[in-house]
Image (tube, rainbow, N blue to C red; front, side, top):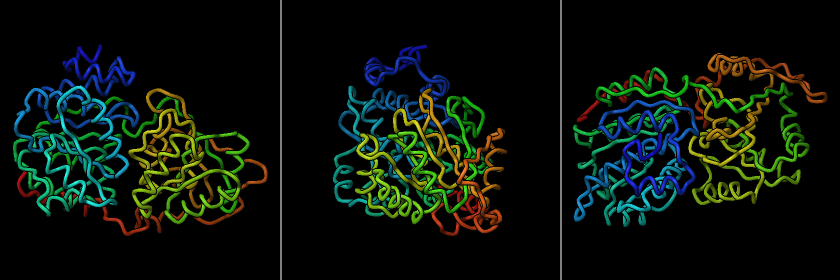
Length: 413
């Protein structure tokens, strides 16, 4: 099957082919026809399999065939949980729309709103946004949702995890009742399916891989390491392996900064990316990592979604996530688009329960290794009880029940 066979215009097919794609991925083959038919979609696919093009291409096709050349109200809204993901999605929109008369924009926090307001006043057909900044702009009457035809929630589960339920509820309340709704994510929990029930209308479910599965070409390796020797062991792996591009995940911002400093002292170029960094610093760090100016990017889970780094060979879980689904998203940064990748996890005694939960989610036993000189001699018990009351950023996290109640209080859907 070709992209032309899916019903896309010559202009869109040309743009896709210029990016090097000739055959649609499974998620694109399954989702695009339903979206073009105007149906609501609940789609789940492994990260790195073309989800973004799966909703971008049919939406662009819709806009080009129904556009009023004299009037440009906002008609398509894409909501994402993080700035990095918003920027990545918008890059895709621009690349795929290069041969059609469609205006797009992206808005997120961390930067001044003046230029965003100026762009919106000029008229845009499709807007990619994070919820917080979008509501700020709406409150300033810089953007209207009254003519929205298509709403897309990308990585909706992460938006709930990050506490955006109330913002989502508010944004949706301002929209027309009649619209097409698309939900795309790498995973769908029971809570997300319940959320979908309140937003989607007779949706078509599309799934191209078992939920919470990882790319087949990603190899998983676990090292049992003493907590105090994790930094030393990370440096050993990077130097002895002569690795030139590694994404390392920590659970906290402070931990990311601390590890970055120690890597630099060891003569390894590195930068940290997390919520306390300015948008300028985050953009610079990501750019330097992509063009190999720095070897190591140390990130919190804010970067687990939205980072598209072609052919990234290695991901290291310096600390295991306390939410098992986040493991899937972290290692989804490698092994993208069918490429091979390696996911390495450093596990101390406090994290053994996290490993068990990840294995249960994946339905796969992760083989553990012990390296002489780094044996785990710490005996601290698992920290599950303490971590359950906190999210990835160290703040008290809403329970899933609280989140669902908030999102369930509909106004004008």
